[in-house]
Image (tube, rainbow, N blue to C red; front, side):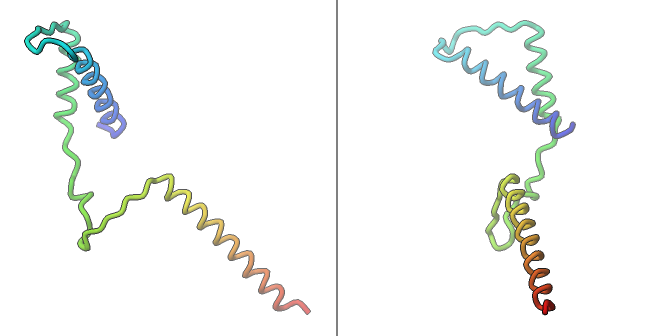
Length: 105
């Protein structure tokens, strides 16, 4: 399964679980629940889909040997990269101006 399909299945499972929990809230714990065959089949397919998907490789997210691991959100990394590119451009511009001034008589 693709990552988007996995995320979609997880989202559907969460939505279904929230709906089921909401429906049972403030109900007698001994009450019976009735499902249509179609609804039962959808829940079973959802469980099977999630159960067949391999667990994420936990080793990938282990802390490094020094015991410290930082996580930075991708939008923040992209913003810092853009700022760095702008600063490098400004640096290059200033260096080229300095070179021109050095040789101006």
